Length: 258
Image (cartoon, rainbow, N blue to C red; front, side):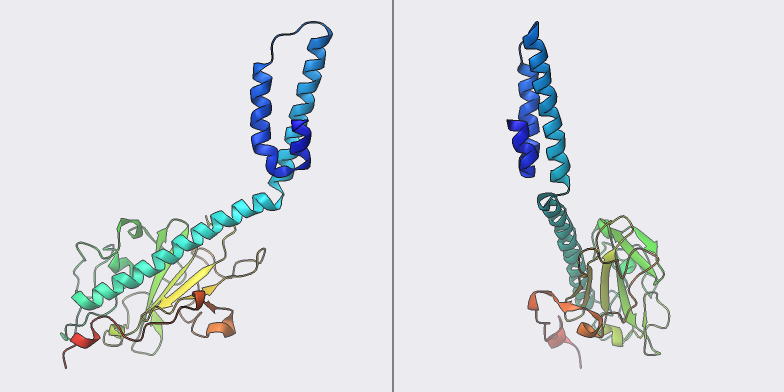
């Protein structure tokens, strides 16, 4: 009866199979006809459990568990993106890289924030402004990105020619005091994940979250989002995360030397 219930109601499959296993191990040794009856009952119970487990694996309950795991991964990625903004805030306030000497630090690349690459002045951050999980970086089609727990993270800085760059070439250090972009997108190992995150110096958080089953727009080292991917906002499918309003000022604005 229990195995039949697990076959009919998939959510009962896991606890039901555990109970069937316990009951089968506790059955006393039987002889004659009773032995064959007990074996037939046990075989039927096992078959019912297998059917129940198969139905559970394809049921909404199982999909819900998968979606919960994906949601947790996405929330973790969002936290990493915000960590990068906090690190950039610290770089602005402490000014470890300040070419014009105005005591307002220029934004740094993600590898520089993690202490994995030297700053524009040749020095390295010690201690780093990002924790050790960001220290592992890989080359992508866009530039060096931090590889953290199934997501890739990159910082784009404004250039003197009017574009954006993820390497310290043609970077406009003065404009970088007030502008930077951050992206986080799934790596190749994040199977099933499609959510991409964007933020900027004002912590304007945008999310690109495609419908379930849609192929990912940006995935892995070979298909990163271009630096201007989210600058078009809703026109490109991005939406504001939980209606969060961007901050109006930047850390240290009131302390900037004239």
